[in-house]
Length: 149
Image (cartoon, rainbow, N blue to C red; front, side, top):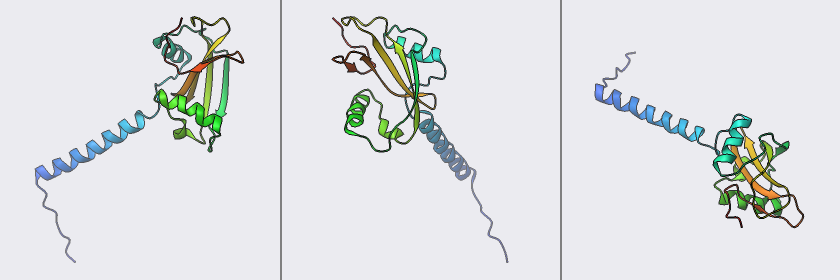
């Protein structure tokens, strides 16, 4: 039985190679861009918060491992609304483990009690976070610095 021989021109081979290269580049960009900022170290996390205008105690006051629920309660849905307003979406991480790093904010004006910045991190990427007070009648808002009185 005789095999059929392919007669490809150089142009056709080049187009196939370029097409494969473009597909690989797109895959690398898609995988590399999932999630937020890359934060491999504590210094990276502190710098991320500083870049947003927050001065924080450089040592986290708390580090907690959590499992993002597969099914969101009403409270988690409401919390995720805050995340989506910031460009994060915890629904993309349902069923995954994450680490919450909490830092004491030192420059929050207009509130006398303790203020905490929390960063949700999975696979060395920020997937969410917030700024909140520890008071029962306190507040919670996104990571971006809010106008303060």
